[in-house]
Image (cartoon, rainbow, N blue to C red):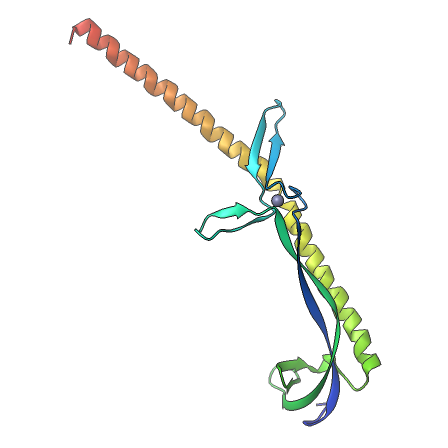
Length: 175
Ligand SMILES: [Zn+2]
């Protein structure tokens, strides 16, 4: 245990800023158009900016929430210490601070801040890319609906024919 209760230290952390930006896939339009090889076009709700609606229905909002992490150094006074899951410290407004995020000098904390900021922004960037890639499932979505429609058309044709046969039988029998 490197530090003691009552000691004043610099805590390296990040500050998160939440922003809403236009959806990178539909650019705010809320829908996308998938064009098949046979030139047929299908309009689908944008999957990238889909979020839960108040009535339980998902809807495409046209924008997405992104998080930006900025450097943040806090001056804290240690109020408690624990060694149960690695060395951690408590302070006012902070329950568990890892030892590696605490520093005697502001300069030491600044370097760690930079690392944390880059690490967290990289994770965020990854999340953003994953969201953008959701578009690849749309082609499948479109073909699923297309197949359902084709099947429904076939069903209509089949049942219409059956009815016609029934009608013809009625005529023959004169019922
Ligand atoms: Zn969208």
